[in-house]
Length: 102
Image (tube, rainbow, N blue to C red):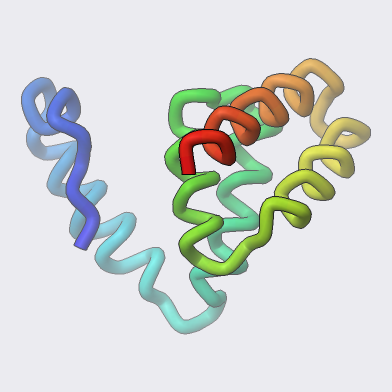
């Protein structure tokens, strides 16, 4: 079960509850997409939206869900052309930090 960060729990307990129960307890568990596919989609969305803080956690989750480091690198390269070069460079840095810490 997903446990929201302490800051979310402290500042917005209902948001933490929705995150744990609805987003990760329901949406991520739906049968229409694998968790691996959901991870690819989420990392791609966070990359093009320049959401670095959330991106790191979802890159970790993607690795846990079977996405390889090479696939993450390819996705970042591909997204540079569709979501913006600076966003891709930022995502590459975030991925590097995650890869080095794992």
